[in-house]
Structure formats: structure tokens, C-alpha cells
Image (cartoon, rainbow, N blue to C red; front, side):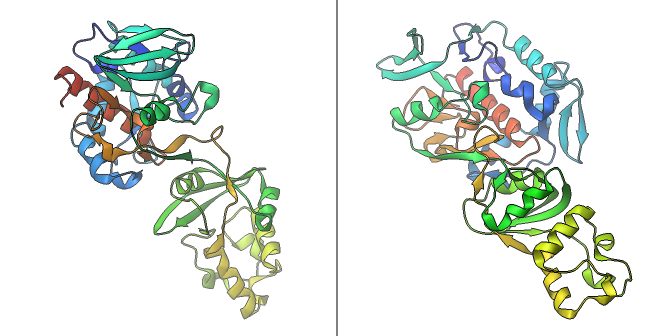
Length: 369
């Protein structure tokens, strides 16, 4: 995107470690590419809100949708605000490829090292190639999806040139379980609507039980903010247990959960699957735990299953008006390599493309933004 937006493309070199650019775009959203979100707010990002807002004031979701529409990428709104590509992720990559024509592209050229020189930067590829550049834009992403070529090169470049890198970690990823919650694995393949709370934040969406632990949109979003300690799950969001106390049907038919899940949860809580009218007051008190089930995840599924990487280059050391380093003139950082991570729903592509636009504008203006 940064290369595509440059007004002056000659003299620009795009280095790509993969056989072709856009590998992560191609697989996103199951190949459908959730391009952006029409409800754009800094609250959806784990980041310095002022830094993020400075970028989005200039390049927001409406700009992004319009830019791609002008290049033939048709979109539709799903789940109230998520913007998906009607013709799939390939339409995005085709539009970008056409837009960056005029830029020299070298594929299968992963970078191993970058050194500061008097007149700019010396890049050394894994194959030993040496490339000199007056200005360098690091748009290398994070560590998620290693099978697509993800690496820590962006973080290593930043640290070698004096930048602080906030500790990277997998994010938008499923949770593994402690022994006390191992029973969840017996529900592998079952999903249900829940509300998950981490600290003061909460998400209502689908939870998916898997053979490894817990996944689904609600868990993935919560994982962005969870680091350690308890989380709380409301398995019955919006459901009033007192409304069924006089019913003669069994709990497994009354609770708004898959019957298999109800039986496993009741067994875990030690409550019999009886007609509601026969339950004791103590049983009803225990059932209230379904509105506030607390446990501590053991960890997460790791970078191989994570959608994104949390952490990255400290934004305090980057100028949001240009994406240029405050420490090293001519050095720029955009996208996921920065300590800016969004929730599910197109927020991370929005950040990648918007920060690239700010950078391209600064480069065209001579680098100062």
C-alpha cells in the first residue's frame, strides 16, 4: 500500500521475502478479506489512542473503502460494520499490484540485517545481496503465520537502530486450559453465544470449544487484552434464570445453550439435570455461576494460530504525522511492526493501510510529513 500511494514511484524498491506480495491478505477472512470496519474507534486497538487517532483523522475507513472502490474492489457490510470483499482477497492484491506499477519489486528477498550508514542504510539479504537506500520503510509485520514467511526482522532492525520494542506476543488467538477446565475439551466442535470479560472490557460473540481449548471470536478478541489471571465468561448473556424456576421441563431443554454443553456444565457444577421446579435454592445459587464463570487460561495457541502479533516498535519513538523514527532520520515504521494491535473485524488491515498512507504522503513531501 505504501508503494502504491507514492506519487513518485521511480527510485523505489519493494523488497518481499515471499514469492509474491500479499500472502497474508490472500488468506485473510478465509480468503474473503475483512478489509476494514465502518465503526472505527481507537478503543478497538491496544495502542496509544492519540497515536492511532492522529493517523485515522487523515486516513479513515471511508477513505480506504473509496480508494479500493476506485480500483474495482467491491465490498459489502457484514455483521453490521465489517467490510468484506465481494470478489475475495485476490481482488485486493490485484488492485494493489496495479497501483504500485512503476516500483521495482524484488521477491524472495528476505532481509537478514540492516546497518546505518552516513548516506542512509545498508540492507543485507539472507542470500548475501547488499542494497543501499537513502530511506527505509519497515513494513514487515509481526510473528504470526510463520508458514507465510513471518519473522522478527522488523523488531531486530528497530532494536539494532536504537528503538524500543515492546515485548511481542501472539494475539487474536485461542486459549489453552488449566487441568481444572480440561472438561471443556469434551465439547470440541460445540459453539455458543457468550460474553467474556477481561478487566473492564467485555465482548459478546461466539465461543468455540476445541480439542486444544477455547477459540471463537469472543475469545480471540479477549486474548488481545488478557495477559495473566482470571477471565469471566457469561454463558447465559441476557438470560434471566429466575424466569424458568417454575418450569416443569429439565434444565437441559430450558437453558439457551446447546444441550451437550448444558449437560457438561451442569456435571461440572454438580447440579442435576432435573425439572427446574424441583431444583433447590442451593442449586439455583450454583447455577448463577453460569453468568460469571471465572478461570485463568493456561496460555494460548501460539504464533502458528494467532491472527496478529501484539507489541512491537514503541510508538512514542515514531512521529504519527509521518511514521518516521524520532531517533533515526530516514527510517519509517508502518503496520503491525508497530505497537498497535486491533481487535477482529478489519481493524488491523485498516491500521496497516492508513499508516502506510501517512508514510507515503511524508515520503512524497520529502520525508517530514
